Length: 122
Image (cartoon, rainbow, N blue to C red; front, side, top):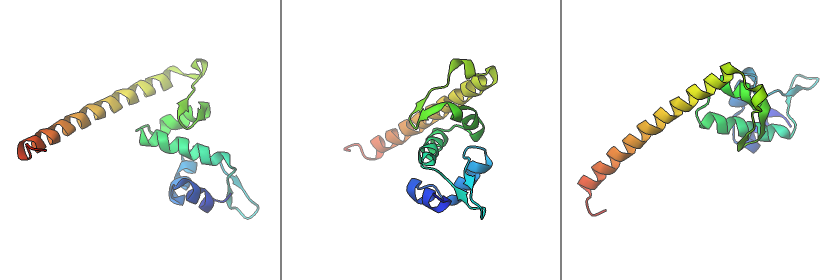
């Protein structure tokens, strides 16, 4: 399928699909006239990339772990493939995500406290 169809079927803009290719996350074939050509497995790959980006991972980390993903909602990074550098990156990302969760939880609590004061009956 061409990039427009992949975009339509995944809901990811063509510009982002090109960016994923630039970041070495997607690897389309090229037709004789230079058009990108994706096989059906690209649908799952784009879902994986979107899910990992949405969870806050960087493209650098995604590029390192993407070869070891089986399905969009599972990460099976084989222990023998996990380098110390990648492990440290993942630990750093987990800590960063936790800080963000803590900040969001604090913001939620402040909003709910405000609502409790201005709308006590709700």
